[in-house]
Length: 228
Image (cartoon, rainbow, N blue to C red; front, side, top):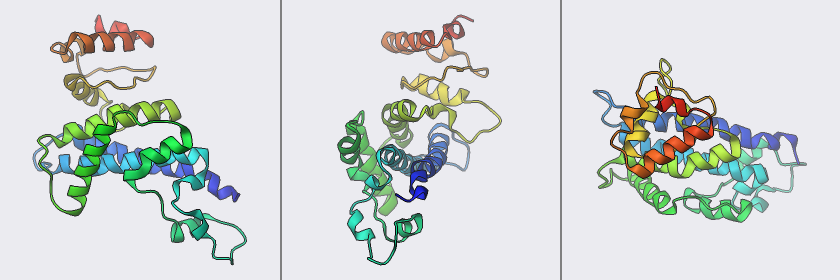
């Protein structure tokens, strides 16, 4: 195999992280004049989802993300390279990626029902008009943190909360949004917040969610963040 093809997973990951950064930003933050961000969050979330799933699949073999690899051979080239893939390759559609992921890795995506809801919303926004979904930001965050986050934390050591566009702050407000929505998320070992009070953020959360969050912090030796 052409050595250049071995770089495909990393190249996909670079784009996936950029899409996730925008997805988080558009789903969490809102300023005057940015009322369109929830719509953009759906597009960016779907883009991030497609790329991360392809990156996972490509770690098994770079060519598994393509629909029909036999069509890549025009009988003239000595070997398959990146440029030929870009020119002739057709990757699997977003709709089919959960099945491809399972067939190639044995992994089932978490929350397939959410995957389908976001897929439909993305198609409506991309090709027609906004769907009748009350809270598109909530849909994007549900997809990111119930589907993508556990997969990429396990496979790549990537934490979704660390991806946002406000470079003047840490992920405090991303975490605040997730806590208030009672969404579970992967927590890095160096987890720290300075702009929010975690006890206040989970003050109205369910007992089950508060128990999960305390347990998650305890597992990384950070439970003291709830006791300050």
